[in-house]
Amino acid sequence: MTMTIPVAFVLTFALITTPAQTYTLSQDLSGSNFLSAFTYNESAIDYNNYGNVHFLSQSDAVADSLTYVDSNGHVIIKVDNTTDADGDSTYGRNSVYLESNEMMTIGSLLVFDAVHIPYGCSVWPSLFTQGQDWPDNGEMDLVENVNLATTNQYSLHAGSGSCVQSSSATSNQTGTTTSTNCTVVPSEDENTGCVVEDTQSNSFGAGFAENNGGVYAVLWDDSGIAMWFFNRSSVPSDISSSEPDPSSWSTASAWYPASGCSPSSAFGPQTITLYIDICGAFAGDTTTFDETCSSVASSCTSLVQTASNYDNAYWEINYLRVYTTNSTTSSGTSNTYAVSHNTLLAVFVAILAFFTIT
Ligand SMILES: *[C@@H]1O[C@H](CO)[C@@H](O)[C@H](O)[C@H]1NC(C)=O
Ligand SMILES: *[C@@H]1O[C@H](CO)[C@@H](O)[C@H](O)[C@H]1NC(C)=O
Ligand SMILES: *[C@@H]1O[C@H](CO)[C@@H](O)[C@H](O)[C@H]1NC(C)=O
Ligand SMILES: *[C@@H]1O[C@H](CO)[C@@H](O)[C@H](O)[C@H]1NC(C)=O
Ligand SMILES: *[C@@H]1O[C@H](CO)[C@@H](O)[C@H](O)[C@H]1NC(C)=O
Ligand SMILES: *[C@@H]1O[C@H](CO)[C@@H](O)[C@H](O)[C@H]1NC(C)=O
Image (cartoon, rainbow, N blue to C red; front, side, top):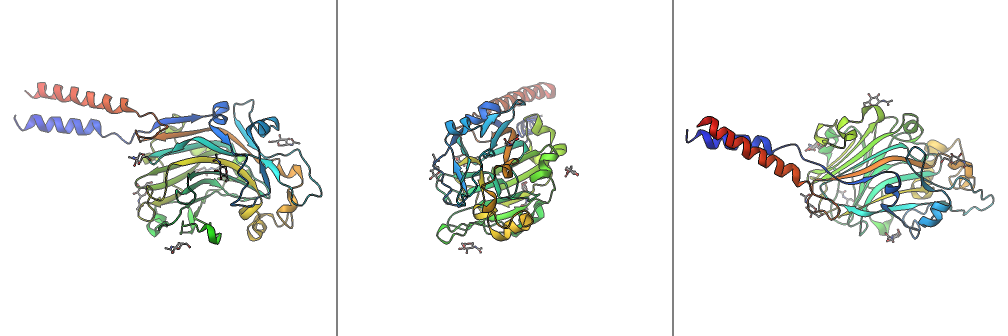
């Protein structure tokens, strides 16, 4: 008897208070509330990437209909596709560079649901996060590729200190690693990052849009950084119901375990960034451009002057949600309910067990 009671108590307590990690919704962005959660950085002169774009202020972007909520309640973020600039070889097309007002901290899960990602020869969209001090506070690229690519590319970028995707990671991801060193050297213009290509068709470009898009997610915690793509018909139901449990999802597309790159020291609080660039260091790189667009134009910049080349250069977004497991984040509200509820239940069951046994 004297042995049984504590055992019963400990067992019931352990069973009930060890649920799967709880993810608490801290930012739920869609429609107009999405656009008001971001700042339009018109001074982002694209120093890093040398693209042919001008980033507009919020008032100019709204006046030019570059950002709005459409009749389906979807957020549209696009480059200008109404202005022709024939004869101006240095033309910078109007676009936007959006930075989230709230930062995401370690212990967060970001989920992004879209039906259209910008594409087209010379077009370079990206949804990524970046620390305050770039590159020392890190960068995580969740959705990115260029021109007429059909699959998405994931990457991390880090500052001084060793940050690599360790080789053990590849047995735990479905994507294909093309570069393992995440370290950026700004003074040498070295900014490839550690890159993983998704192998799923429809993860980018026209195929993504034709398949009604899908969901991207990045989970950043002490074990590492994992990134997923789910096409529309394979989105886990716990994502749709806003009760995500990444431990139940299929193998990630990209996985960066803590063993090769410290998720806490190589990355500081992250600003979510969404934008569309044109040409520049990636889309405009001659080799990259020719891979999918050599039959369309002889050079990237020759496309920029013609508005109709940008009819597909838009994001159409259902929502962006950030969940946190971290009660100390500045932006999140902690879910103490789940813990205290379970604790109360455990105490109740233990008392019940006590009376049943005695
Ligand atoms: C806007 O972008 C520029 C250039 O990338 C950067 O230096 C600046 O810090 C950004 N402004 C804000 C408010 O983030
Ligand atoms: C919570 O966030 C803070 C601030 O970014 C960080 O220092 C801490 O390690 C995080 N805790 C967990 C459990 O992720
Ligand atoms: C595989 O990935 C999961 C997260 O998706 C992680 O918990 C696990 O430790 C990883 N295993 C290895 C060997 O990296
Ligand atoms: C990664 O790249 C950086 C910068 O070029 C270099 O200093 C470092 O030695 C590289 N790390 C590995 C493991 O190759
Ligand atoms: C969607 O993803 C599932 C699971 O990976 C795959 O079996 C299916 O073929 C994909 N559908 C399309 C249209 O790509
Ligand atoms: C510009 O792109 C939009 C899609 O964002 C499309 O509806 C429109 O027809 C395109 N052309 C013009 C001239 O606006």
